[in-house]
Length: 254
Image (tube, rainbow, N blue to C red; front, side, top):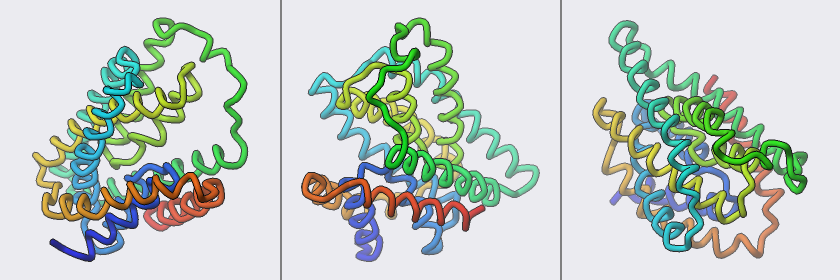
């Protein structure tokens, strides 16, 4: 067991439980800063996320807070998107040997986007009012849902970022769901997406299994502790601080 990695997992898990901010946006840049290649950081994060999402997804399935048809539509776009992203990544690396550069740049851009989305939700975006998209039945939004899934799945396959934060924003804005259904649907869909993307990265040698399990040793108690304290600590200022750190990380990577 690597104590340093377990402590990193503990800190990241604690912040995720405390603020609800997506773990990939926090963990992937940290792994790069401590010396892991971007390819390994992304692949390992996807594998690690697959395990965490599995347990969360089982819990939401038991609670009946998963909209399965919506999961199916999102996954029918996101899974091919992730497959194409990893395939292109492998192709570009074969011809140009620039896999590391592509991932670092794409990751930096996505961290900036995720940070901006978090700050928008914290300071400006109100979701109380129903919009025209939410009032439309799911079947009328099927093509749009698949297209959004494809675009965001492509991004997740490339960077590991967005399987929670960006999909959650799409669910909130486009669909009339209870907050528990947003979380449950998001987690179950993310499990399918990151499992496929993680398996593809593993096939390219981008997953460090020992690193992933050391992170899990720390992150599980971290998430539990953060979740316990979340009701007692004001979340808005913390989310703003975490979003700012993510933003700075993204700018540095770009």
